[in-house]
Image 1: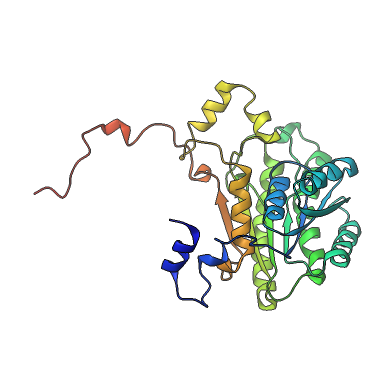
Image 2: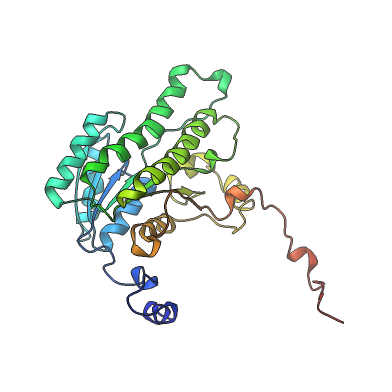
Length: 293
């Protein structure tokens, strides 16, 4: 069944249905701003938005890396420009957003995904080490979302913060990240309340283990380590950057018009807990038929 056939089943013409997602050039002439987008998941989302016709603006701390990221989009026929910007500096972020609006017009979609991480026990972490992660992740997210407001298309704009399972799952050696990501989740909920009356939706996406990312290369540097992680995921595989991108595309579309202040776990069931074992296969052919008389 193709997208048009699905749409025909889901609702009469004129209603917000899945035709808001299943169509070509979904984001044609939309303006999308991405923070922390020189590589990884955030760049993958930006590339996917550009493929669907969005005009894309990228920021990151490294001028060279962000220009390489822009080239990866324009070489494929997309429309994009980028600039160096530190999300910890509100004035720098504001300047980047102002430039984006001057170049492309009011902003339809903002993704805040700049992040920092390292592995350390709390007793082995300095106050400054803790602060660095909070400044990039939490303060940076606030700066991007708050600074974006005057430049948004209102009503109708959609903002997304990238969070992580550590926001709700305590983790050894991750006190700094858990605190920062938990703050992002609550910030998203507060802004959803405050900005909803102005027609601005604010949500977060929480990726689980995503293939071909620096984070997973650090966490699972060997095939054995990778298998150990995959065996604990309910869906038994890594996610992809495309999985996250298409979740963000849904949040950018009218199909999600009634969704705000929500944290969407796109993680294969990671936040549910460990799924090691085989609850189905263990029964083999002996699955009870409780309908039998």
